[in-house]
Amino acid sequence: MTLFELTGFQRDLLYVIAGEGRPSGQQIKERIEADTGNEVTHGRLYPNLDTLVNNDYVEKGQIDRRTNYYTLSDKGRDALDSRRQWENSYLPDER
Image (tube, rainbow, N blue to C red; front, side):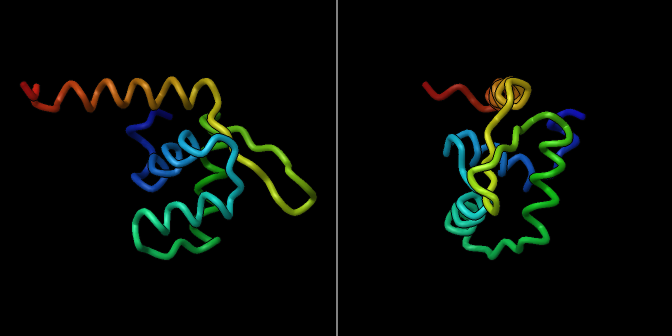
């Protein structure tokens, strides 16, 4: 699976995780809601995080018995770098 096959929401999750370090699911949810102004349900958030974990873009760890944290894997970081380069190739050169 490549980043092109992910949904926009899943790519947004990758960017939030990259910017936050090792956020919990709740912290990711709050950041997405603050940035978009839209509510994110647990039923939408966690299956999408699981997809990212299952496709090796994100690693999941445990903070305590009830709370997990998420961090980008090397594959996830490389994929975001490649995506950024691809996006930049289509942006006009501002001079």
